[in-house]
Image (cartoon, rainbow, N blue to C red; front, side, top):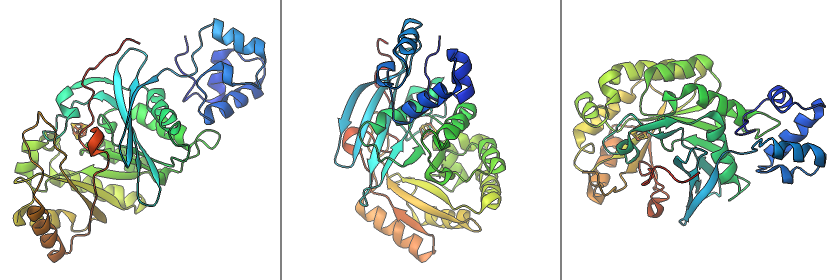
Length: 341
Ligand code: SF4
C-alpha cells in the first residue's frame, strides 16, 4: 500500500499506481507541487482514476497537522506520522520577510547533546524521505512563499543520510519544489563521515555545525559526538567541505552561561576558526525546564563578543525566534511521543 506520493519519481508513480498514460504522472506531480493532500483535489484527473485510487487506499500524504502554535516570528506545527509518532517543524520569519522551514529528520535523537531538549528523548526512529518532505508541505499551508529549508529540527540529519539525500533531491526537483541547493542548510552536531560525504557530493548545500565549544574537554562533556570525532577531526572535515566547493560554513555557537563564554573560550574559538571560511552564529541558550544550564547574562554576552571582536572572529548574534512556543534551537521535542494515527 502506497503511504505517500511525495518523493516519488515520475517512473515510480507510473509503475506503482499502474497508470495507463505517462502524462498522468506529470499531472499528479503538478498537484503535489501545489501541496495536494487528497485525490479529490486533482480535478484534471479522470474521476474513475481518482475513485480507483481511493478504493485501493493509495494515500497522497502520510501525515497530518496535529497542532499549531504561533509566535511573532515563528509558527510551530506538531506533525502526526502514520504510525502515531510525533515530530515538530517550524516556519521562521526574518526581518526582511524571508521565510524558512526548519525541518526534523528523526523522531528524537541519539546524540544526547546535554543542552538540547530533543536529546533527552533518545532516538525513537529515523524519518522516511517522504515524512521529511511532507513537513515542508504542511508548513507551506501557513505561507506558500517559504523558500529556504534548514535541517535543524529534531534529530541529527547526517545519521539518516539516505532519507536526507532523497528529500534534498525532491526539494530540488524543478517539477516539484524547485528549491536551489544553496537555499538548503544541513545542520549537524559534527558527524564527520557525513560531512565528508556531503563534501564528496559537492551539491552546493550549505553546512551548519553546532560547535558550542572549541575546547575538547568541554565539548566532550556536553556533546558526546566529540568523544568520537574530536575538534581536530571535525576541522579537517570542514576544510575538505570548504575545499570541495568553497562554500562558507556556519558554526552555531549556543552560549551557555558560565560554560563557554569566557575569554579562554573566545581564544579557543579564534584558534579553531583559523584557516576556515566560517561565520560564527552566536545564540543565547533557550531555557529548557529539565536541563541544568542557564542563559548567559547580558554582561557575559557583551564580554564574549568584545573578546571575539578583539580576536577578529567573524560572528553574528542571532536573536532566537520562536522562544515563546518552544520552537527555538534546542527546544524541539514532543512531550508525548505518540498519538492515535
Ligand atoms: S543538538 Fe541536534 S544532534 Fe544534539 S541532541 Fe539535539 S537534535 Fe540531536
